[in-house]
Length: 339
Image 1: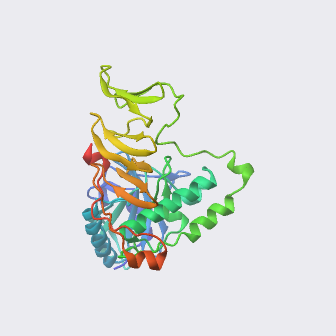
Image 2: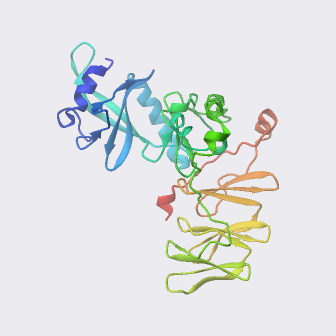
Image 3: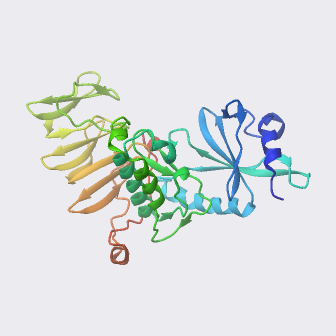
């Protein structure tokens, strides 16, 4: 039987009596009230649990839980990538259903603690940067074959470092060739785009520092130094990790630094070992997923934390049909698990 919004709201005001594992959670209050909303697929609210902010969803249909299970099974195979994990808690909440009988329901948690929805982000961040973040999200979703099917502004989170991620996977599918429609996202960004307003909005926090004039600052116990226009690194004991051999270098982040030899870029680890050889025209690092995005001669590559190509095979059909290469990724690593 379908759950009742009224009884769900009452259960949130007394979690210890109605929930099993979420008894220590705290509902997010708005003007002192617990806010419960309804979508086509679920009843929703927001809670704090284990120091994280979650979107707590109570699906109307058990089939939707099975759908998420299948999505998560595939997501685990590729290491989640640009997705947010669905935490499914079975028989988590007990409440009265629409006909007044006591019944246990499954709930779903999605971690939303690191971002704000796009419809709020348009008031915070510069429009050009938002458009770039949305385009990058689309490319990454297409690359792993994940079709969200409902990319509206409330279903996309923007983190302060410019990473866009989708939430609410009720209509999502794993498809060989996905086509994620971002038209509604770009429309709302352009709606709020105005030179005067954009000048007052914030830029995303940078993930690397390329300017030579920056002072030498230790990151993760390693300091980047510049001497004679060449870059090198020393550890906390002032021992050289690398000589001054690079034409440019980023600071270390999550145990990795991007370096350049002439016009080509690569990646090294904390010991100075080459993780990715300097053969690419450009490399960017997504600190949240641990994935490097590299370009070489106009082709795009996804590289995992250990320097292995996730998949470098181009599908001719996808290239002809869509005018761009679609990368099928089998293994995306989680940054924290590889540290």
